Amino acid sequence: MSRKPLIREVPPTTWYFRHPRYLRYMSREITSLFVGAYCVLLVCGLGALADGKESYEAFLLALQSPLSIAFHVAAFIAALYHATTWFNATQVAMPIQIGENFVPGSWISGAHYVVWALLSVVVILLAGVF
Amino acid sequence: MAKSNKPVVWFPFAAGGTVIAFFIPVIALLTLLVAFGKVPAGLSYESMHSWLADCVLAKLAVFGILALSLWSSAHRLRCTCFDFGLRIDTLVAAVLYSAAIVASLAAAMFLFRL
Amino acid sequence: MKERLIRLEVFRYNPDTDTEGHYQHYEVSCLEEWVVLDALNKVKETLDPTLNFRWSCHMAVCGSCGMMINGEPRLACHTFLRNYPGTIRVEPLVHFPVERDLVTAPDDFMEKLKRVKPWIIRKDKQPIEQGEYRQTPKELLRFRQYAMCINCTLCYAACPEYGLTRHFIGPAALALAHRYNQDSRDQGRDERQEVVATKEGVWECTFVGACSEVCPVHVDPASALQQMKIASSFDWIKEHLLPGGGK
Image 1 (cartoon, one colour):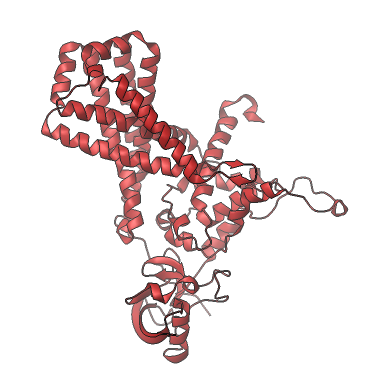
Image 2 (cartoon, rainbow over the protein chains, first blue to last red):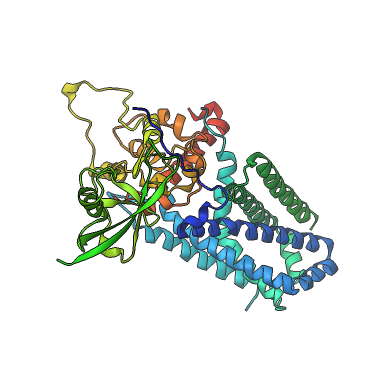
């Protein structure tokens, strides 16, 4: 008896609408667009800083435009989402076996969150926010 | 099939992803304050210039954070393009990786000039 | 024991007469305690003997009855009717060719499974009179979760990268490669790396994580793949950047 299996193609541009977990994945991946653009903006800021006081202060002033505020909010949310997905993934990517048993995954991710909080506080203090 | 050279692009992606996770949220928070018109004292021209101009370690740290974050974003964006159905991976990779390298070189040049 | 009228919307495909699939509706009275597989069996016994599906153990061990249930890859024997108040849509596992109705062709997975050599490879075989290769509980725990795989291929149906790039070796086969790599009795990692570290191996994975979410026996293929990416990256550095290829 000959076989005639039915091949069902995956829609290459719309497949992620098939399940909420794929949408979650795509939103994690799309954070890279905002983070990447934000890093380019930081490089521009560095360029303004290298050009001298006048251009740096013009750069800071330009950041206050409504478009810039919207972009910063988006970049901040994207960076936060990236950070949480990344730290949650550390326990998956780097399991640690001590003695016989594996260290609970929440400890590995938790340690990353603690370090993250400390580093953020240090940066905020260095920047003289308070 | 030969072993892949993907680690060349993946290793800096993984390192950059970690750097983004640790540093970009707080940096974005600081510039968000600037966007709202409240410039933190440490972000003024004088203080930014003084700690970046005098300290080689600070220059290296800023360059490291920017270069790795740029690379990581470029790599992830490359995969995302494929996931969205853009099947010209070689071109997408060339454009995005080049952009990350150019932006990193620019950052290095600006830091050098300070 | 409460009875309930269950509505099923079942994918049908007959290779002898059809060029594409269609859906057929069945209504069948079931006990609330039953699983979807029981409902399908009752349909076959009382309503439609032409309905085809695979099953064997009815206890999540054999891995035969994987199908899409309301869009989610699941074992039909492990999916309770009481969790599905409405119509239940039953389709063959996506990403695999459909042989007939709910029966899919696992040939591609079987071929890929063989390629990663999921068995213990020894470079120095010790004579049988020296006894077995001994292992501590710690060494066993290093790989045990990956040994639980029942080859049901739900992870292949969940993995979008496998659906988009068919040459990808895929979650279960790579997780089993990792299972043997992690086994203290095994000496075959170098051989497996020839498949694992290629473009078709771990590098097609973008860490969606769906494989681990759908696994009915709680294997974590996503973890295995990330660990192998990290290890393969260190291999690459050793082979290309260290004098003498790190040998």
